[in-house]
Image (tube, rainbow, N blue to C red; front, side, top):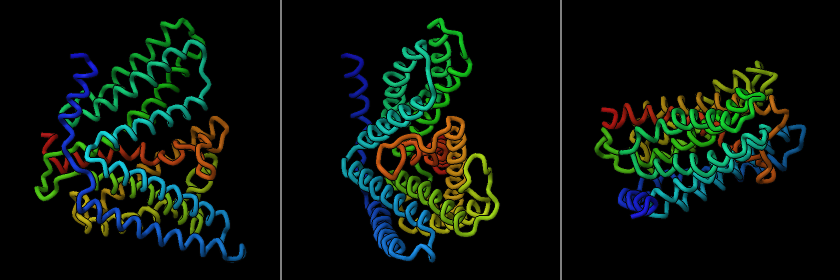
Length: 341
């Protein structure tokens, strides 16, 4: 048996969960209903005179609602496939494209190209193969990139024989690999959590959908609240649209919505647990947005890419998810399952 045949046999043996169960379907229905209302509200606001509403806020709102429609549709389709591997492949492709956008903004030298080949075509697929093999491979999945990957990147660049700006080049590739691949891979890994302390909870598709929904919702609410009531900008030279008032108000509203979504039964959380987890996602998402904005300011660009008109790049849309996914995964694993012992 070849290595690839062995890997795919292991993956096939671990795929037996139908993702779109009843609670996830209820949550999906709630999201679609909210998106319909948001779309209608955006069209109404768009027809208002510029003197009554800020056109920039309305346009940003409409763009983000469209992005939500796209993400909801893609996730719904992958959930219809009775195996988590479709969702894992989807996130693997998103990681690949986000890494491409990141490297495009960080100039590399000829000596880095072979290292980047290993990053794109070996380390990235290997990380998602380990995710697809399930929670039994958590120990290797959680250290592959931050231990072995980072050591390999620095050694491979050194072997190339180009010492100019060595530390800077190594750091750029390691940061991109960590954020775009390692951190994001924790999102589909939620599908493989098992042994829930809440015996009534059996599948994790609703948990992943809840996580992405809250991450995107908190990002939007912090932005809109900052525009409406914001006075004190957190870091003017990094991101002029993020204010302390917007951060606290957006996080608070997100917690309330998160608590309400616990009633769908799509997560293993009760109302107050769901509110706290929503706050964690909102805080980490804001940290991700600020960090990625700092990188963009350093490179002198506004967006990471132009994949879809009006929506900037992939990395602009998933920065909050990248930072929140590992923290959300570990808190859920340690406090709501028996996997941590």
